[in-house]
Length: 198
Image (cartoon, rainbow, N blue to C red; front, side, top):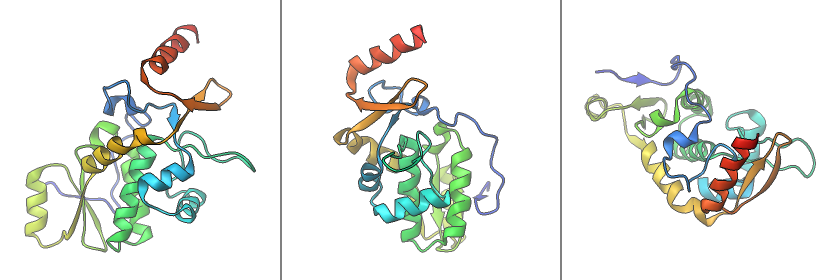
């Protein structure tokens, strides 16, 4: 059995971080330059704004597109950030300690986005385990250790199914100015033109 115990485990080298396009071959789905404000992130992940703010300030789940830089500025969370927020919420609901959740989040952040869809996290309330195959899941359950499972692919599908209902912002240019994302082919055409000229 190849069972991965996340807490205290060294993860693989950073690969594909920030490459949401690899997870979403459909061009209409979110990309690296599309983000969601804090209030939207809370709704999608099922958390309070107080939790979101605390996790961002303590570095548990900081936004990767844009952090708040002062009064009037807004954090922007990527699709992958939303996924991590949802996983953190589910781990908290099972009673996993913030210390173990922090280790799990660091591990997930190092994974490439393609890998995340194949991961199932199990927790016995104290420890987080990662399984990437049905055999590992069976072995873990037979060992009596796993009592709660989170299929990351399921969380991805949940977010993908509802994310279009929320307004997104596209970070434009080097200056980091955000503008509303209107989605669809027009936005894709805009991105392609920007790549050719920029």
